Image (cartoon, rainbow, N blue to C red):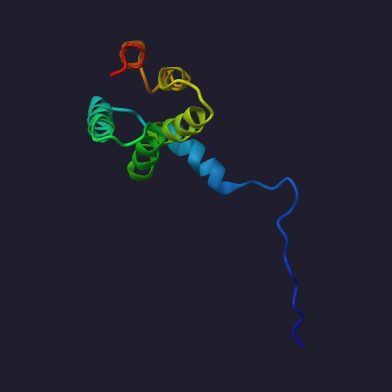
Length: 112
């Protein structure tokens, strides 16, 4: 006679999906091409009248680069809370350099 045994995840066990995500993030490099594609797609959507939050959401869904994907997810949450886009980008110096952030900040101030 077989008994049904329910195996529960032990408390304090590893969440392998988070470990895998962290490894992918650490090993991923961000290329100039990745940034150019991001900037072009973001500008195209923004110029078409798409809200910044929606732009970030769409780009997050389509992004294959782990570093940029994590940054976009966090930036989306920050912008929804009312933080400026440049300030949200500044939290990711390994993704966005100071020149890129400064250009976004200038655009925000200038209303572009």
